[in-house]
Length: 297
Image (cartoon, rainbow, N blue to C red; front, side, top):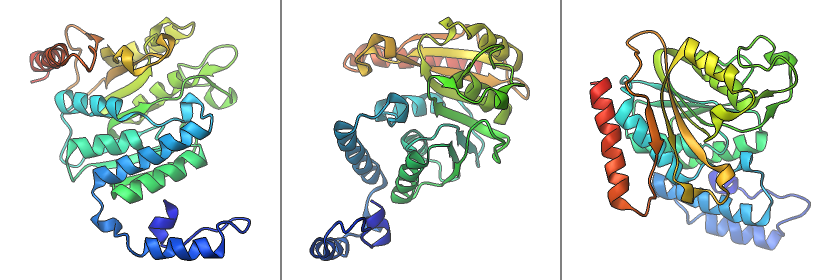
């Protein structure tokens, strides 16, 4: 993909051969990336990544967020979040940028600007290619999400957060979701960091384990959320998207306190029906719309 963007052929340890280099350059000269539809470009990138996943054993935290989940996140944003004309959208664990680019494409607002943060240089390289191919209005930052972030007062923070322990205890010692002993959960810390980066009244929509509030450190997270944000919703994603029930994820919906924010009544809880059941799925979306109208007209 980098070859396509630059028009040059990267050569490592004599590969590809001089003959193949010439063939590739000839083919590259016939490709007009400017004429490539943004959606087609993103789908092309996905197909190549999926092919790579079949060959390499990629850990779950390094895999891209599937389109289905990205579209559901974008739908919730469209229905629930009232974004200003020129909004800043921050993705704290941007990975390959598939979630962020999907959201930007679905919202269809040319004034939105995305910012992506990730500490994995390989994932960020893939994100850079995704952004360049789709011409998405996104800036990428190669850094640890726990370090100071240049993007403050975000209008919306999204993320498909990595699940596991954060290894550097000293760095997160002063954070409210940090464990008193041992390693802290990285996804808890990232929720806290996300709320910190939001402007008052802004929203956060995150893809997280369905059993988020059942872990041994859940009390720390719940206390933090109650103090600084409103827990507006927790919606389980369709079970069919996950081979293992233990790996099922949900979409957490938070709103930072302040500004015009308020607690929605009741909290939006439930599970998305099967994507194959059109009637049940559409009925569930109607319920979400009704909740929004009742609480945030």
